[in-house]
Structures are given as C-alpha cells and as structure tokens.
Length: 340
Image (cartoon, rainbow, N blue to C red; front, side, top):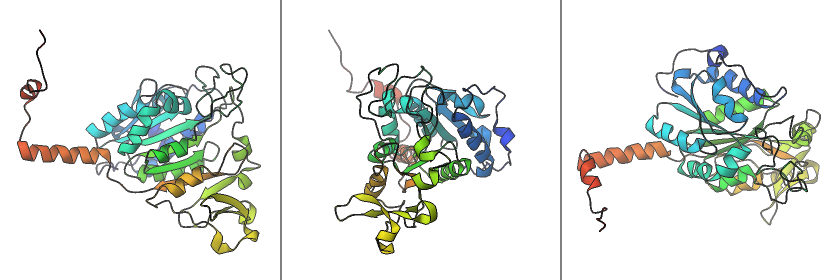
C-alpha cells in the first residue's frame, strides 16, 4: 500500500458509472461485489489502483471499477501489467483473467510473470468453459466434456491451475469461489498483503454455458463436507465437526481419512510459509475431479524479492558504476554490422 493512500473511501467510490453487463446469474457479479467491498478495507485509493484484463467475460471487469484500467488483448494482461508494475511501483496493479484467456493463449505470459515474482495480484476466474465466444471447451474443461467445439467429448487432459502456477514458482497461491463473499474477501485480502506475484483461482459459475460446474463442491448443501478449508499452522480437518482430515502416507502421498481412524498427531498441519513448494503442490493435486473434496484458502505464501524491486536496484547500481547512459553509443556499438 502506498504511504500516500490515506484517504478513506467507501464501496461507492470504487463503483464506476458503467452498466454492469454480464448474463443474469453470472458468478462474475459476486466477484465484483467482493472486490468493491474489500477495497475500502485495504486503505487504498482508486487513483493509485490499476486493473488490467485480457479477453473474455471476466475481462470486462476494469469497466466496472472506478480506477485506472486497461481492457487489453487476449492472454497478454500479465505482460502489460508487468510493464505497469515495474514502471510505477507506487501503484497497486491487479490482473483479471479467465481460464481460457490465461491458460491457453496467455499461458506463457502467466507463468513468466509468476516466476519473475512481479508485484501483481492475478485473479483467474475459472468456469471451465469459453463463455464470451459461446461455449467452447477450455483448458480446464474435464475429459469427455461435450461442447460446441467438442461434440464427441473433449480428449484433452485439463490443466490444474494451482499445480501449474506452483510449478512456476509463484510465491502466493490461493483458491476461493464466487458463492462465499466472506471467504473470497479474506483470500483477496491475503493476496493484496503479499509482496510479489499473488495468484488466486476463483471457481466461478457460467450459468449459461456450463451451469453447475462446481456444484458438487461448493453447492450450499454439500460445501461443508466438500470444502477443505486450509488454515496456516492448523491440522487439516473438514466436514461436520471436523470428522475428516488429511494425512501424508509413508509414500509421501496425501490422503483423506476419517479422523476417528487415525491418531490426531497423524493429521497434516498446513504450512503455507514452507519454502519448499512440494506440500502446496501435493494439496493442489489431492483432488482429481469435480466430485471430490477440494482444498480452498491459501496454499502458499512465501517471501522472495519482487521483480520490480530487483530491476530498480539494478538500475541504481548501473548508474552509480557508469553514470548516465549514452543511447547513441549503444546503437552504434559492436552489435551492429553493415550489409553489402
């Protein structure tokens, strides 16, 4: 947060004058409400906040925030946001993207922003479908998914977004969903407070082209038994009265068990600050389909110098060693040659 961001705001200060145009019942409304409600609590101001999006239904987000913003091109939001964050480290830069935008054409830009640890807050709306282009399968659609582009069922193995970004050395990784504003705001607050690249996957319902994609996990009647709420420093338990838990076997694999069948000391204690990403990766892989208990919350939150800070330090160091640069000399250096 910028030291000058002291003016008190309300949710209304963050709402633009644009009519919100998503399909009635779309999960994007819930995310927008959560973000607009959270911003005043963070103690930030609209004029020092930027939202950058790519292409997709979620990418209309910047229109609805009374901040600086850019509706950019397909998949390139992380690259554009990287430029903003490095050039203006005094700004809070958010990226809003979808499973198609970020994980298909934008996959390369996403993983490099994460490995560089650019100071960005990246929100990936995952509805497991291409919504804006009317219902084609996406990189997170399950095998066998019948869509307009896969009439006989998809044969593609889907990405697990969290294991992808953990493998990219992301320093903050979390998951939430569009039906619980309190949980979503808590996760987004933690993402904001992290210095470096924060990645949050948001399970988001597309009620037109993929309605109920996550109903077996986050449906109101089942979420108590299906959502594994990760809390740093606490044993991983869930279900009614915490009757289920997670243990690590001798083979290193994580398993869901009945707590009554194991010793309390056997339960895995969640460590979001563990430098080694193996545990976070294992938690991201504990679920194999949309019908199994699924972890939510902060998987990983570790410290590493952010990219913008390192670039700025390098520029200062170069200036101190060599003084002001000479662009003309650079252009005419021995990296040029004459043809003919």
